[in-house]
Length: 214
Image 1 (cartoon, helix red, strand yellow):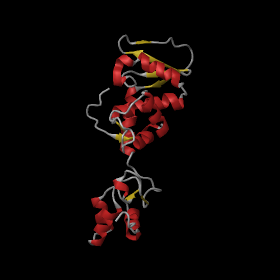
Image 2: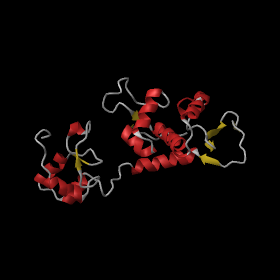
Image 3: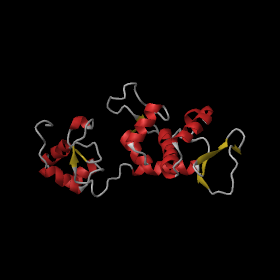
Image 4: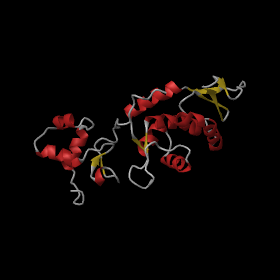
């Protein structure tokens, strides 16, 4: 897998959106050692204590299909993980995986032979190149905000020190209000903050910053 030109660090919320796995699954797999995020301090109670790499995301997307789509039991996935341990962190991305019934079949890169005999049952292919390509597309779309998110102002724990921001961004409402006070038009503000929309700017015009966040 060539991901040398891909740099990424993704929170568990991003990882859940990109992989279809729940945050609960991600946390459980981390605690059990099944798949740990590449960047994580010992104290997982710290803010952003689970940060995933691009390779992690590709692996999780493959695992998400195996576990949540094809219903492969966790007990079997753990056995597969043990069998592929010699591949290190690339165990889920170094070879093409297949599903036969609810069991994983793989092509051993050392021998180019499949480890289980494929019967007449249908085999579902999860090709690595497609997994990587789909992951890149998903990452590109990660910051695309839906119509229901534009114009909304939220406060979230650990995001900009709980300062009011526009939903699905880290842009403080106060920053836009300072531009408005300086006489900037909506178009000019959007040029400064391309993630924002006219609805966001209009929301900032009428929003009152809480005293605790001022």
